Image (cartoon, rainbow, N blue to C red; front, side, top):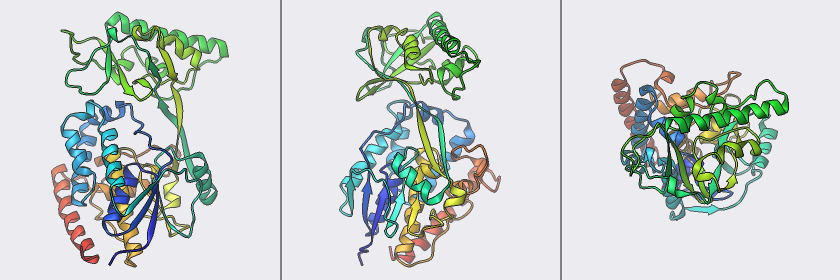
Length: 419
């Protein structure tokens, strides 16, 4: 029997897409709202850092992939294929996966996509807030009025974007099929660029009569203060470029953007006239047009321990659910998992069944448990890692047990709905 109840999902990112596709596949009518179809805001540095992160996190994310496959995620097969093709370092897995997911949304008969900026919710309807960390100001304020407890972090940055580059000085990266370009820097060029940033930083401090600029951890001015190679090791790592026999000391990536090229890893909190100093210092940028300067992007999260229960349901409103990064998660796999579990809980509510709880010895349930206890003064989003697991068994044993328990869980879940 086809379910007539409609669910409203606010946000068309990874969590929103997974939630919508799961519900729609079970006959639920879904209305998904997205202010505008922006591409995934990622400069690829985040994806590369995830790919090259410590083995603890890498193994944990592999475990999360296996769990998503067992739970029949709509996106995981495509995500795994993109990752295996090496796109973590070429074009970004996340942005291509998002495009794939949105195409599935547009073509599903039980889903309608509305390009509307949702400013408040009808509390009598079933709603899922999956707006990520960049929830609109109006909706953020509405949520704050409802719950009185939200988290706002100001240390996320957008890189500068330029066009009219002199491409004679730029190269392609070996194996990179994207339109991205790379600027090789010899040692003296890299040091000269760093010195230009230091000069701009010091001049700003002199002008404002400040002792220091309280910048975020990954701004160029803060990184250079940690040592001459800190910037190189973070975003300007050397690589093999087409047409160059030797690896350069460092490289700067110019990522193709609809407005021009984004200069990756060049986040700064300095005023625009001081950013001019080091952007125009780069040879391809001598005569460029700066379309967007680096800027701080506010990231908003619900205060999960006080707002939702273990089923992603708002404590104050049983018809309101949350999913994805807004709950305090980081990473597209984590958002996908959150959207999928939220959809399962919604389906049980629509069908008049009892809520389900995933086996506790899984990465997904560990993430849920962690965000519900992440109420410290210094809040930071959570990424899949083995440290959040309750048991410290061998990693292969943990993965094997997780698969067995989730397989049994899915058999029971599907049995409830005669799937």
